[in-house]
Amino acid sequence: MNQAPAVYTRVIKGFAALTGVIAIGTAGYMIVEGWSFLDAFYMTVTAVTTVGFREVHELDDAGRVFTAFLVLFGVGVAFYILTAMVAAIIEGDLRQVFGARRMKSQIEKLTDHNIVCGYGRVGEEIARELSDRNAPAVVVDRDPQALERARSDGLLVVEGDATKDETLVAAGIERCRALIAASDSDATNTYITLTAKGLRAEVFVVSRVSTLEVESKLRQAGADRIVSPYAIGGRRLALAALQPIITDFFEMLPATASGERIVAELAVDEHSGLIGRELGDMLAGCRDVVVLAVQGAGGMSVGPAASLKLSSGDRIVVVGDEDELRSIGALARR
Image (tube, rainbow, N blue to C red; front, top):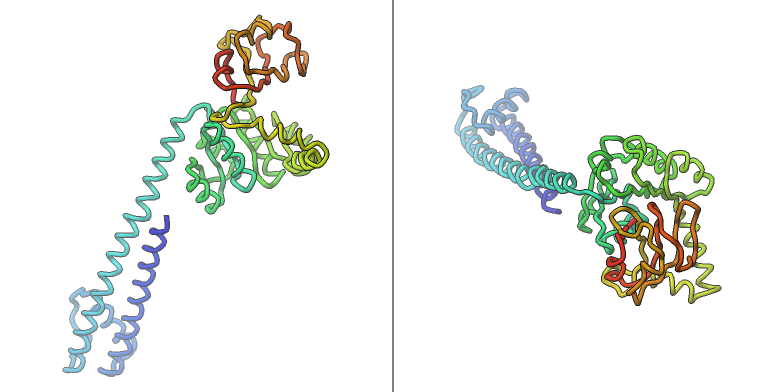
């Protein structure tokens, strides 16, 4: 990633050397031959570029020797600039073009992915968590340094303003599972939510909020979930002081897919085979699955009874072994 700037530096040094040669040549003809500035400058340019024009004035022996050295140095500098420019094109622009095309092609092939708008401290944690859970993600940001960090982390990126339609379209909003507005600005997150919902009304939008006063505006904009990192962090710190075992329990729950336990949602739909079944029947044969809550049309039931009958559209919050969870229904990653 650092080679292209080095190539461009060689080009700049080459042009600086060429400027120096022209300045020395112009001053030399003025001193050696006593020519005017314009004649000396014109003769220097024609000599360095080797265009083959006739001499401005007849040269004496000293002028011919000076011209010979000027041509040698000038051609050398010109050749250096040419090779540096070719290297800049090959190593810089072409690499960026082909890299951008390759990344665009990879994004176009994605479906059911997540779009993370903003790659600051919160955005980095979001992307890391998604990566740990094997959930594909595309990072959208307009800060080149943030995008460079995202690329170095192995993420797909789109450079641009996430409040613009074309940027979210390039990130694949028509095919994504969810969009996460993680900008540091509440106003920007509100505009991102409005843009996303305008392009695709059913897209699931999770938005970060810094001040609770903005929460109502984000809901009006269409955000499906609103998360305040400061409020969550404050509650966790208070719990850690008052009830540390509970915080240890929460730390255990978000284990990755390779861990012994995960907390997840089971979707009750036509693909799950769970419609009309009771919770106790669903858990038959599962030794290591606990149902924490069921979200249905009537609200959320915490610690539901085994006799609860499941309906289409319900979502079941469970904790347990992932293989067992996959055996009893469609595991939703949202």
